[in-house]
Image (tube, rainbow, N blue to C red):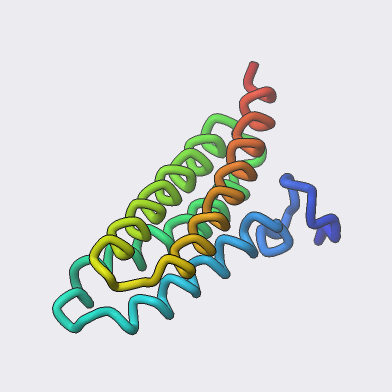
Length: 131
């Protein structure tokens, strides 16, 4: 059974979650950026950015499997939040090292901030189920 409500964070299919869709786009943007990094960074900073950004939608999708177990669900959402913060740090470091321009940084950092707000909202709702 699929849910068609994109705003329903307890959807059966994680792919309808707006936060998952947007985190996937952020991840795709990070992968596109890292393709342009210097060769010596491909397996260092570039790889780290790819791992942290891909961890966000991966953890969101995994959290969705634990709707009946709110503590586990909250753990995966918290992991997604941590990976998102790591991605923001990756973006900041990439800017400071001159691998991305200020406009790209601002765009992706703003999207990251919005995703953080969405995840915190989800975490609060899941937490209220535990209390």
